[in-house]
Length: 309
Image (tube, rainbow, N blue to C red; front, top):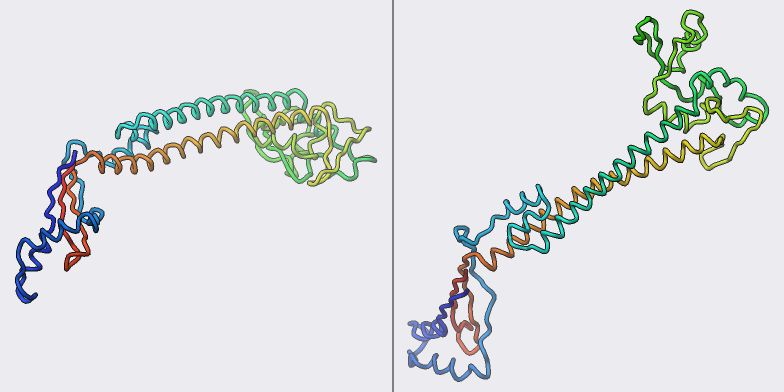
């Protein structure tokens, strides 16, 4: 609702009656001039030059609240300023993204366990050490060293007590590793630490080829790739495929988590603009504007004040 009070042609009258500006015209002259020129040269209404929103108005909405609501729950700020469609859109995107995130996270965990299970069945720590020398014959020259002295290593520990408590730790690239492994006092007491690095290394690097149960030292199966030669076995390829799929699922889950955060921020920014728009339309507002008319000496025909809520 808007109530306006206009003081049209007031400036023209005052200007004409001001001392030092010539003779005093008939007070009715500006009124008559404005009436005669109304049809041929209508006054130009300026945009509000004076205005403000009353924060004490019962309809005033606080931008900070809208932003906070949307940061907590996307669509909350839009609900605060009575925008139900946007509320449903932002909240709906949030629910869909959360459900998809949970789904991809679970699939990633399941796939992660699947590629670890494949390694547990088809790759063996002791097989890798005992058979590594067999892959040094003809046909394998183009591969890096297969065995403990390659470019990578695995973590190991030694169980010395009868209770099974690990007492020695190290890496398979250490000089003392083979001594411990083949020493009669520690034979059978050296174990590999099956951490994430373990599951990555045994499938990713040729160095650990001899640990796969279907690797045949008499039949080299080597492919040239942009990153170098790769020794292939059916079980190693299957392991790598499972790992790649697990990484893809976890990456998708990461993208969804980023999308959820972006939805919160976008909703908060939109809520700030929506609050400003609401206040312009609904909060108590005092404004003023000028009416211009070239037929007046100052070019100003009058002033209009308005009150809206």
